Length: 91
Image (cartoon, rainbow, N blue to C red; front, side, top):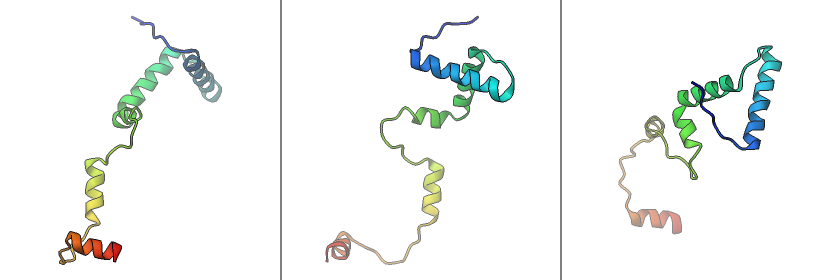
């Protein structure tokens, strides 16, 4: 059972552009309902990217990205304290 979705004129226009481009490039006429369904499916498949697109600030690294970063770290065997860092940075 179809449900109405309210959208502003700009969004409606973009939806119509997508619909027209699909017909132009594939030769297949699709409904706006079909376009919206595919968009939702696509968003669900890349859920974290889609959700992150609503964030106002930068996103922290994922567990996999953190693991990749930490793989490149090595231990030199030398302990460094705050004074050492200050001396190196500020002289």
